[in-house]
Image (cartoon, rainbow, N blue to C red; front, side, top):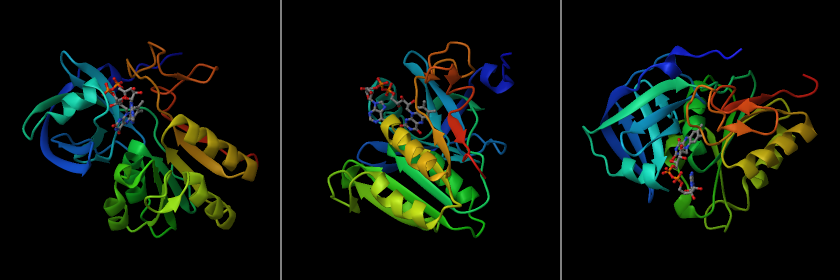
Length: 250
Ligand SMILES: Cc1cc2nc3c(=O)[nH]c(=O)nc-3n(C[C@H](O)[C@H](O)[C@H](O)COP(=O)(O)OP(=O)(O)OC[C@H]3O[C@@H](n4cnc5c(N)ncnc54)[C@H](O)[C@@H]3O)c2cc1C
């Protein structure tokens, strides 16, 4: 039976931008005057600009709420025109995020996937071994290198063209870690082909993974069906966006 969550159904709340930070040539971090202490890594909010659209963004922080937005289309470019003090309407926190496990963390981030993984890496800063792999097409597309270093994680960088870090996809950095840390959990967020590759690699090695899927979220509470992933009716907004895949034997 569909559970209609109060948060999803509530009217958007007014939020003001209190700080803006440039992350790279097309990505800005927005700090809002919103505090959601109950929110956790992997959850998202719906941001609404009246007359433009409403779009999902992963939480980078919950208290205060922060999101990082890459300017790639109509909505995100409009977000980038906003200044400190301007208003954006938000609904959230929404969705099921990461379920932290004991043992080492291996975070894998492609594109804006750095946001939820930075939030998670901070949450898991309890002395355990934490690795983050960030992958991008080129050096200029990389995000959050300094932020991750400041969080004290072991940082691994890959670029498709070799202009920074290791040359290749994130899997180049991931494979040796999977060999060395068989009790780790892989937490990932990024483009679909990257997540599909990670799922196969982890399943072949019987390693737990948690994958945050990007899809076309509209309503945010499981009614419209536009964010279905796969064929069995799994909805990114209601059942995810994080899919938890346990190893066959624990
Ligand atoms: C659960 C979830 C969490 C998300 N979190 C974030 C987040 O933290 N930060 C963020 O910036 N976006 C995030 N997104 C994507 C975001 O919701 C929008 O899809 C994105 O901002 C593009 O919307 P738009 O209207 O500006 O562009 P659109 O008109 O929808 O797209 C314009 C063009 O850009 C392409 N495009 C869309 N997204 C990207 C991308 N990331 N990189 C390169 N090209 C792209 C599209 O394929 C299209 O060709 C998330 C999506 C989901 C489902």
